[in-house]
Image 1 (spheres, rainbow, N blue to C red):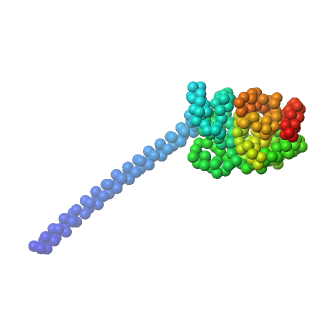
Image 2 (tube, rainbow, N blue to C red; image 1 turned 30 degrees about the horizontal axis):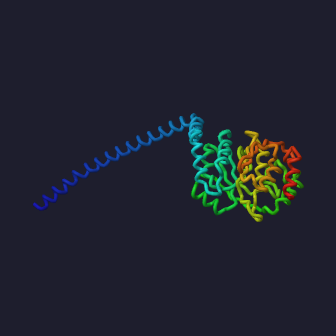
Image 3 (cartoon, rainbow, N blue to C red; image 1 turned 180 degrees about the vertical axis):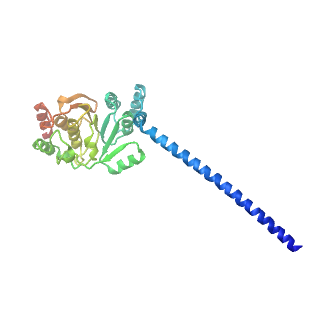
Length: 314
């Protein structure tokens, strides 16, 4: 009986074993069929998408480019920004009159507007906001403050630069430029390759290739004899404006603290009174035109140069 039971048990196992194999083979066939279908569908989808994505590539690029540009700020919003910026500024900030003049220039600037600012000031974020769809670049003498501002406000583009000038050297520096105006200190040149004492040649290379529409000189510091002063900034602004390669052939150059000697002398010498549009409160506004590459004179009228010489020698 025991043997019979064992036999029966073995028989059942023998009978069940082929059934299990058959079921496993069927499942594998279904799995293989499913994988094949999924692979074919994926390949067809990939080929279809690739073929149809090549044609509208330019359209996609145009749409993505246009979506980056935002509508210009409304006149009401600009007024509000200027109003509250002037009220919240500390003693080092600009007056409402000065801020509004710069704001008006930016509103007239063709879009996109390239805006270069010498100096990180209480108005830094305001300038960034007002030049909404343009490129705004800040240059500052303090590398630690520049790094701090860039970290705190990643949306701003700021670079540090080392000035080698002193306010006490104003007269000597102006004289040196006059002596080298036909060579290193030409009014039209690429300052990246210049050894002119007043030319800033250690900015990022790309900044020398840009055509700047508006340049604001509000730095570096210039209120004590050993301070760097704004001689280099004003000279550099004048050269960049005259050396434009294309686009709008005019550049607005605005100089803050226009009541001080350095600013007066250097604007007379390198921006020229003949190019002055307005002088109001503490802001001097000049409009410079692109000049021929062979030019060797900053100002057309000699009296401005003589005036600067008498001022610097007094």
